Length: 235
Image (cartoon, rainbow, N blue to C red; front, side, top):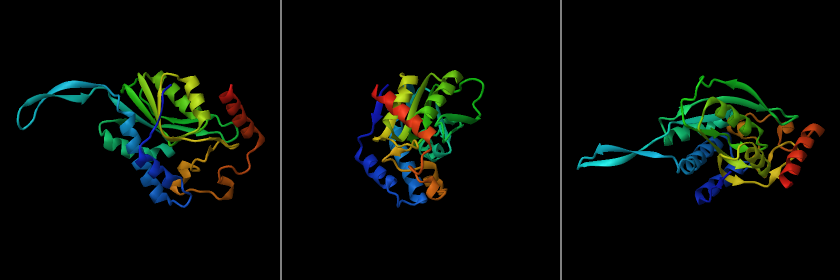
């Protein structure tokens, strides 16, 4: 599974501001959008094109048009902040929503919303989720999209943890992952370290107080799940 970590200096600069705990929700949302635009540009660099005859004001020529239909799959709710930037790059993309939440004890994904049509209407799907943490939600989403009939699936995230990449790679070794940064590890609550906290809360201003601070008071079951992921990564 190719993992593409952006080396662009603008990505590094904007990510530094995004991570800063003093960055307010409005600025945070703007940065998510800007980073998504940059990562989306890189993620779609290998999409196929077809020749198409056109006429410029001077003469006829053969130009290139994008061949596959592309679908954007934002993972609710944090992935919503990445959609507008991708639509600026590709206004004809379809947008389909999949809702998964992470059980805070088991860290396993639970599906609660899926409005995909009966058969696939696109050839390439880009999963949009700011954080690739345990990888469980990403792997479950790819399962859904492949069963739907998508021929190719890519993951676009701002930050990834090695544990999440390993989980997704084991489940779906054929897909590409595009990220702005690969961080150190998951803490015992399943948050990426150093990370940026909860991407959804920081986008939408829904910080719930000290209990929601990443790293606060993991219970034994959650901590054991993280330890298992880290053992698997070393094996």
